[in-house]
Image (tube, rainbow, N blue to C red; front, side, top):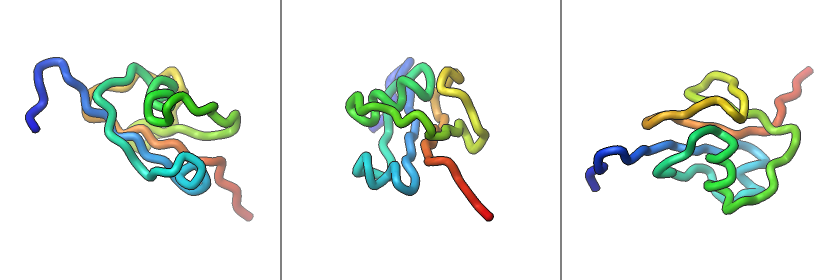
Length: 82
């Protein structure tokens, strides 16, 4: 399906325990202004855990970082190591 003028496409991905909690690994959204809105739309308004991390195009980001057409937004739990 061809995109119409002004239609966005944003890939949203969920990793590890968030993927299990949300019940999906990824979703495509037509629009979102930032990762906070992407979370709300992709999860049907599920509460956002306080400690999750977000990346936009593989770079750590804030939940108010602007996103644009073609961006990838990824949500994942904090990573620990030892």
